[in-house]
Length: 272
Image (tube, rainbow, N blue to C red; front, side, top):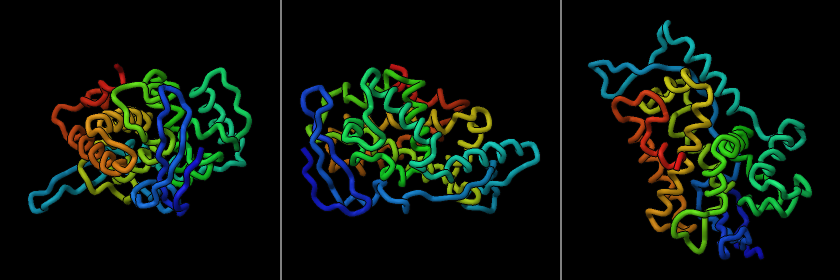
């Protein structure tokens, strides 16, 4: 049963858990400006950098060196992905959405790309394309990468199978779109050059692994759920949990001797 209050853009869906199944009641909380739900959420434009600190500067400056041209190429590829909106008329996008359903609910037939069934995954309504406006096609690619590469963790989060859960849970799919957007912001991928050290560090990982953004997405999703449980959060706390997740991820990316994303402490959540 849907209990709706306020229907403005940027509203956030809370999902009520009923036993251990996927029967859900949906409520809307419209005072969540930091939650994706409109095109205004997604920034555009990024370029490749390396980090250098000048003695006279209070903060790092980031300049491309000849030996790091590959960084620019890899980052441009990521930019191209970020710039692609979800297009419900595009057969490739339709196939990706169907593949996500099949990965999430194997053996359960999808009745249509517009269907009440999508609410089982934590979309706001029966048409997921309305939620993708906040993250574009890359947010669907992130979810699909997660489902295919870490199926156990994906299912654990989808079905809220770990820990002492809240009565009103965060919606899995909408949370996923928010994570995509948060990472774009945190890594400063909308700027001509990342203006933060974590953004510059990420470029290095991206040059070494073209799936670095997708992998970091999976790590972040599991970290968010860990923070959710640690904070004994309910749906009204979602933005606070997102902020705590971002702070922790930034701390981990700044650790010394970090040579790959798999070295992040939170990676362990993904492989349990």
